[in-house]
Length: 84
Image 1 (tube, rainbow, N blue to C red):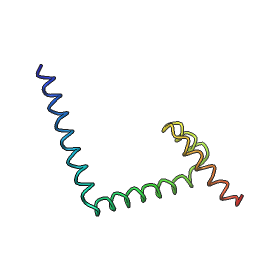
Image 2: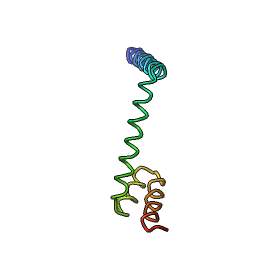
Image 3: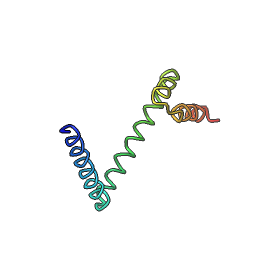
């Protein structure tokens, strides 16, 4: 019984904190622009790392993350490098 009450309390607390954070993000345009800039920088950094990866590393990363887009992006970049 105590464990169930504890679990419900933690769940309620997580929902309350998540709601507050979501509200703050939606109400502050500066925060939205900061998050967008941060995400854009991470995507750019990821693409730069992708450019330097070998084919084996790309295949392993795609398999590990179960994201075939990684391999597709790498192949597309290789074709771009060949100017085809």
